[in-house]
Image 1 (cartoon, helix red, strand yellow):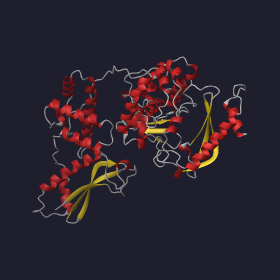
Image 2: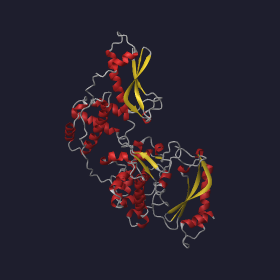
Image 3: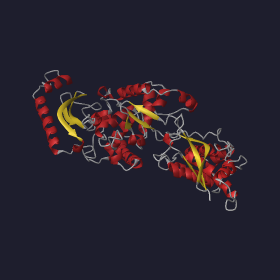
Image 4: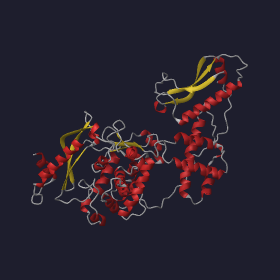
Length: 526
């Protein structure tokens, strides 16, 4: 009996660095190969050269179904033919294509394949259940789905405007992928003839107030630390500020963002990376005001992965991370009198303040939000992205919001709070002129060629800070999983050095003399 399967021959790479998927027919211990119209890139293959791209796999399965049916029709039990004869017969051109494609069946397989890849997969499942309820059955031919049917579905949803927008986006996306899968076949026949090209999901106008004011944002930055070490409020406050200073990054992207090797933060936006040819990649140059928060939550153990933050160690998955953030945001909202505050407000706040307060143009803000406007989809394919403009705009925004906080002490929350522990003495909070803050720290991304870090002394005075190198080095074995220095001897050395610096500074009459931070650094080094 003949056997048939599709495979990629590793040694058959083409000049354009792609591989043609072939059908291997084995008959009477003789193997023959049939080329297909399916081509794959290295990114679409596993390490063992198995196809992992869902659409390409579906195309190959379709081809196999056609060839298997033809082999069955040859009744090989009764007809004696060679492998060459069999291949000639099953590759004839009078093949009859299937005319029915079950949309529900395809949709369910699509969900299973993308379960771990797409954020918000629950929305896709809910959309399918809603569409099945609308149709009144679980078997739906793709060729039944028309613009008119989708418009009827929207009317059926009634005043559920958000659901109409969300469900239609999900259904249209899966339908378009089904068309691409089934219509790209051996003979180029259009199996799914219907198209939703001219169907636009209804726009949902959000009336919910999500952005917070400039004054409330500054008040949020000044919320003091809770003494509890596992405070969800502390984390929510910090990650809200991280999101704002990372151009409104979503929690799932903060959870997984990485260093790019040049001191920049980069990630592919989880929400849209599978729908855009540029994978929704963004490169962010961290502002100096962001660095204290990066250091506070730095991932020092993931050397190979180069994660910026250790949230992937603090929480099981992005969903847990998001849940804890929004739980903490309720407490943050109470502190700044902002009822119903959610983490997503950071994204809206960034865009709103950028446009209304700093005159950053809308197109730049769209790029900062990592949006792609439909009108520019084709144009963007031909333009190599340069992230300098959005980073310059981001620096302008952060400077405006936080560097002027010292000048605006009249806000009610500014007088009430002294600021979080991480931010005090750095940039974002009020600092008493005669108070000098001295601490020691590690900078995770400054690992040297010997796989160790140099402990630095951080001196903060009059709203400015300076880092001073020391002779203390820390190896990987001295750092715990949560990024803390675990070697007690080294901790004592660091604390002793800090105490020594504090003692030397205490000898100075800061009120009588006009010292600046550079004067203090020179005193410590003299």
